[in-house]
Amino acid sequence: MGMNPGKTSNSFLPDFCGMRPVIAVVVSAELLAMVLALATGGGLAGFWSELTVRTLYVQWIALSSVALVCLLRRWLGRMSHALAGMAAWLLIMLVALLVVEAAVWLVPRDPFDAHAHTELLLETLGISGITGALVLRYLYENYQQKQRELAEGRARLRALQARIRPHFLFNSISTIITLIRVDPDQAENTLHDLSDLFRASLSDESSSSTLADELQLMRQYLEIEQQRLGDRLQVHWDLDELPGTAAMPVLTLQPLAENAVYHGIEPSVDGGEITLHGRFRKGVISLALTNTLPPDGAVSCRKGNNMARENVRQRLLASFGDAAGTSTGMVDDKYQIRIWFPVRRGSS
Image 1 (cartoon, helix red, strand yellow):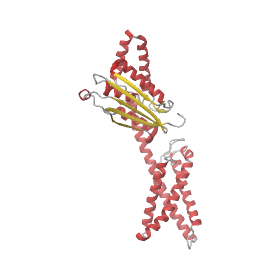
Image 2 (cartoon, one colour):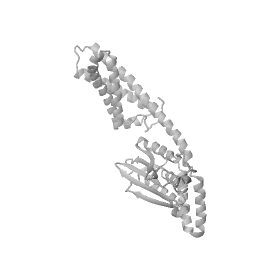
Image 3 (cartoon, one colour):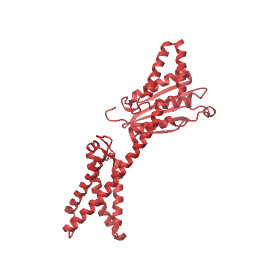
Image 4 (spheres, helix red, strand yellow):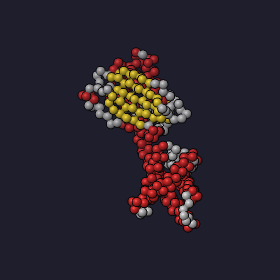
């Protein structure tokens, strides 16, 4: 394993305090117990009794190791990857040693001499050491692969983030020029909105925003488009009481609104509607953006390439992992994209 200089809070070890990792460990330990039971060569008659003993023994070591790593996760998280891996491996070996001694004390064999004791100890430590090293190596390689994927995603996001469609910029400037003649105050407000959008677009890709700020940017963008499209663009907000201070990636909602205008509203002669639904349930924020679609003939020249959706998906993945996500579909003949993400502690 490569050595990371300095301390790191981003450990390759998963959160073994969660239910899913524990279930994965239990299943993997049971598969190991089955392999060890089959390796005894006692035939089918003795397989089940051997499996029972092996299961109890292996699960003791696996679950005790997981519990110990869970308790020490903060300490392990401050280490480099190499030191954290070595410490976790030593913890597994320590647990294996303690389980052997507990087994000898609780379930003495007849006869159970020093030679049998040593043989059991060496067998247990050998299997635990090899299995633990393989599992830790797998976790490290899996972590590295995810980091490479995230790095590639961030490289794409840096290019996407600074890209607000040129047609939107040109249309906004034209709108502002027109407003200067008839409504200078509104032209100034629109210019401020455009400035805020570009400031967010040019921010660092790792920057974090809040739900309230993202909703405000989305409102500003739609207000600019309403100045240009007039009554052709109708916007409806259906939001519960949402935790405005909830952290989320910067410039997450505006690309979705831009996509809805570009593909759903602008090609239609009669315009259309955009509705944002927002709900907060059990620590998870769910936002659904729905837009009407133009006639088939109008939309044929604007086939999407899912860049905005992929942009948002990658941002949520980088910030929240598997706890966040996106989905798309048709609802009542309207196109809908839904995103969800958890509220981090201390941000609500």
